[in-house]
Amino acid sequence: MSTEETLQSKFPAAGLKCSQFRDNRRVVVPAESLQPLLAFMKGDLGFDFLAEITAVDYLEYEGATDRFGVVYVVVNTKTGERLVIKTFVNDPDPVLPSAYSLWKSADWLEREVYDMFGIKFSGHPDLRRILTPDEFSAYPLRKDYPLKGRGERHNFPVITRADS
Image (cartoon, rainbow, N blue to C red; front, side, top):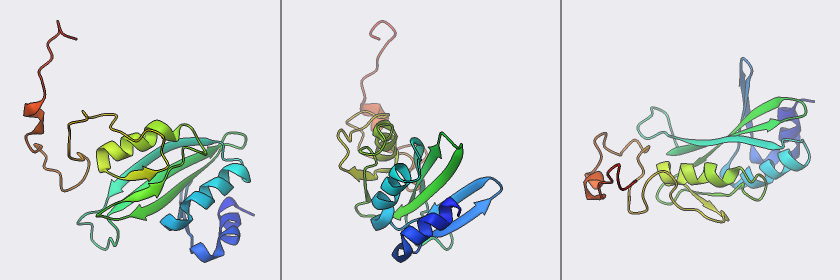
């Protein structure tokens, strides 16, 4: 039985959608089933490495029903199996449960997604900005963020080579 079939039989009410393109295997899961699915994958299926968490802003995408897609890439290091897990969240308050309790590598990955997209992870031990200054009030990878910014960079102090 494939990993996707195992997940579908374990979570029948979740309505998981599985797909494959070449060697990329994907499972789309509703946000409310994400945490139990990730815990099952780690504990029972041996996916012991969280390789990546990222997000996609679907604002103005034709046919998109959700604003943000959050993508998790998990790997079973014993078998080399890799699986992409995708879920969706929406404005005004996009929140997902943190994967930090399962994989410590989620710490900085979730902080990056929060900093760039504004998606919060409940239960994260230290959810704060990691790439932009604390004073930065916007989320630069959102599609509604202007290409030239909103003038916020002009308020930051200039640091010279001697100061660094």
